[in-house]
Length: 379
Ligand SMILES: O=C(O)CCCOc1c(F)cc(-c2c(C(=O)NCc3ccc(C(=O)O)cc3)noc2-c2cc(Cl)c(O)cc2O)cc1F
Image 1 (tube, protein in one colour):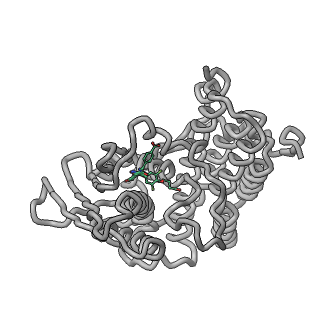
Image 2 (tube, rainbow, N blue to C red):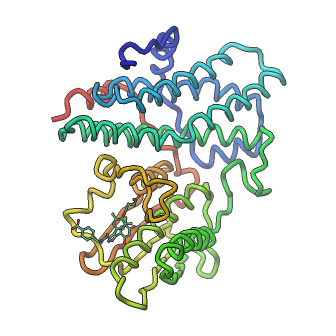
C-alpha cells in the first residue's frame, strides 16, 4: 500500500503535538543517580512523555524521506511499527498511576522493544529495495545517510530508556548486582576488550582456521598503576569492539592469506583528564584514503543479505551497517569512533569515550525546521 495512503488515523494530531517538544538528553550520571534512587512512579511519569516525544520526533522525519524510499515495502513496515508503538504508549497518557498501570507499562515497553528488535535489518532491506528498483542520485544518498544516522541514534536512545526502566523495575534480572540498569558504574575496559576479542576470534577461527593474537596494554595518566574503569554501558562498548575486531581480523587474514604467521592486533587503552581512548592497531594492509569514507556509508555498504544458511558466508561480514552503527554508539554519549588507515600497511581504529559521567550526555536528533530543511534543500 502506498505510504501516502497509509492512514495514520487519529495519531497524526498527537504526533504533531509531541513532535513540538525537543527530546530531553540525559547524562550517564543522571541515569546512575536516578537508578540509585529508583522510583518507578517518577520513571513512568518521565517516560510516558519522553518516549512519545522521541518517537514523534523521528516519525516526523520518516515522513520527510524521499518518496522512492518511503514507498519501499520495508520502510512501510518500519513506519507502521513506530505508529503502533506510539499508540501503545499513548494508552498511558492520562491514566492514574497505580500498581496495575505500572506493571502494564513495563509489559508494554518489553512488547515495544521486541517489536523493534530487527528494525536495523528491516531498514537495510528497505535501502536495498530502493537500490534494486531505482537509480539513487547523490542527493538521495546524502538524505539517506543523514536520516539513517539520526534514525539509528534515536533508536539507540529509545532502547536505552526502555532498558533502564525494565531492568530497574521489571522482572528482568540484569545478572550483575552492581549494575544500575544497563550501566556498569565501574566497567573495566580491558575485560570488555578481551571478551570482544575472544568472541570475534571464534568466528575468525571457524572461517579462516586461524586468527591473529591480541596484545593489550593500558596507560592510566591519572592513576598510574590501577585498571582503567569507566561508568558506561558495557553492551555498547562490546558492540563497538566486536565490530572493530572482526574488521581487523578480516583484513589481517585476507592480507596475509599466503602466510603461516599473522601479525597480532595491538590494543592500547589510555585515560586522560577528559577522554578514555581505546586504540586498535592492525597490520591488515590498510585501505586507500579514497575508499575510507565508503566504510561509514549505509548506501555503499548495503550488501545483499548474508544468507543465514549459507555456510560459506564470510562470518565476519554483516549487513554493512556494523561500522556506522558502532560510531553511533560511540557518539551517543558524546564520544566518537575514528579510523586512520595506512594503505599497504594497516589500520588504526580509535574509540573515544568521555572519562567523566557528567559530561557523557546523550546526543539526540531533534526534529525541527533545520532538520526538515536539510531534506528539502540538499544540493
Ligand atoms: O560486512 C560488514 O559489515 C563489514 C564491512 C567492513 O569490511 C571490511 C573489513 F572488515 C576490513 C577492511 C579493511 C581493509 C581492506 O579490506 N583492505 C583491502 C582493500 C584494498 C583496496 C581497496 C580498494 O581499493 O577499494 C579496499 C580494500 N584494510 O583495513 C581494513 C580495516 C577496516 C576497518 Cl573498519 C577496521 O576497523 C580495521 C581494518 O583493518 C575493509 C572492509 F570493508
